Each structure stands twice: as C-alpha cells, then as structure tokens.
Image (cartoon, rainbow, N blue to C red):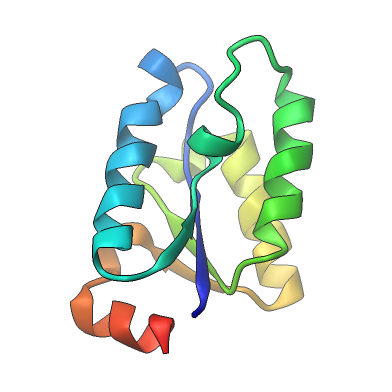
Length: 108
C-alpha cells in the first residue's frame, strides 16, 4: 500500500490546524489509504518548528504521495515539504482531489 503524507499550514492557525489535518487523515484512511499525519507526529505544543520539521521530513521520506491541504502556500513548512517531494519524485496532489477511485489506485 502506498503512503500519503498530509501537508498544510499549522503555524498561526487555531489549534495548529490540527482539526483540518485530523479530518483529512480520517477521510483518506476511510478510503483505505495508509496516511502519515503531522498532527499525530507532533502533538506536543512546546516543540520548536525545527524539531517538528525534522520529524515531518523523515516521515515524508517514507511516503509515495504528498497531499496538500487548502492554504498550504501560506506555510513555510508545507512549502519546504513540497520542494523536497518534488525533488525526490514523490507524487504531489491536492488532498481534496483524492477520491475513492484514486485512493484505490494509490492503495494498489
């Protein structure tokens, strides 16, 4: 099964935008996808941006697809993840574009 990494804005958002990350993770998992959710990787509010990004980038490297949440372009972290994904050949999609038939192809 292919792994999908969720990327999007956190800094400056209420609850670090965890509700959006968690909702998207639940939606994709309901389609049978193996999902890496940075909100689950970094639940501790006292961690620095750099500490979080180190975990996130390591997790991203285990994935086949980067799924972008709305307003990702406002995030330095999401921009970095996008750049890395592009450079190492990870498929990049808008998370909202993943639908059941696509999920079945990704899961295969």
